[in-house]
Picture (cartoon, rainbow, N blue to C red):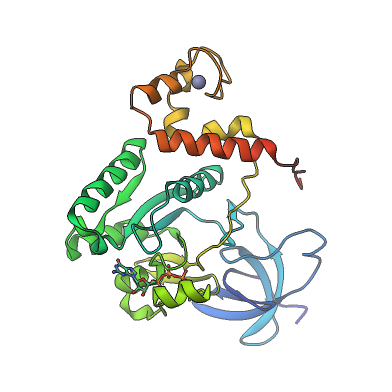
Length: 302
Ligand SMILES: Nc1nc2c(ncn2[C@@H]2O[C@H](COP(=O)(O)OP(=O)(O)OP(=O)(O)O)[C@@H](O)[C@H]2O)c(=O)[nH]1
Ligand SMILES: [Zn+2]
């Protein structure tokens, strides 16, 4: 074994102490060896790793290669983009939840794409209202997908375009429809989906682990719906940089470093009162700003 060459691969799945690593179209079941714990590195799905084989199907994980980015909730590394699966109802649409997810992705430099589900459960007037919500996020510059406005063929080709050669994480509340959507895109996956009422009542999640799958020429991670938030590991004064419509206009504020709260001649507040920045976005900004400001200091590991 000592003479074996190190192999390189990617962690596809992590389950009770084992890491399944894909290398040359083959999965090796590995265990971590070495001082990962001391180095405070937890091997994570999506990690590019070096490992040594002990037999045809097994080996030891020796090294995690530097990450481009990583998320804690869901735990995944080296992601290009996130599909935010967001339901209109069951569970109800929440501006706050969506904005929190967007900020978390912006901080980690991961491109969000917002995909709305359960529009079929809306009546016409609610649907009209929902289109306005969609447009407000489009206006900020986010790509959004309202599937009910597209025929199946168009949707299929869109998902080919989006997923190809990318690593995409499907995120969203439990019951939002992540697994259902993945089954639509790639029926061969046959992912288990949950009856929403049962799922919510029992507080159970249908999807329990993060794993990568090949879909449409790219890699996709289905993730368990979350019940708590990612900690936003930034200083409150920098939160403004993760609201694109604030960031893009901040140069017109009178003060450099304006946090758009109490400063005079603030362009963001002007845009807000002119209706060009959404009140919900501003309210969620203030809310997050206060949460971050009031929490105990976080000491960076590095
Ligand atoms: N009416 C309607 N129901 C949907 C839609 N998308 C998903 N559902 C239903 O919602 C329930 C939950 O869907 P899942 O795909 O299991 O949700 P999930 O986001 O994967 O949930 P977790 O695995 O728990 O995180 C299932 O009963 C689906 O059939 C939709 O667009 N319209
Ligand atoms: Zn300002």
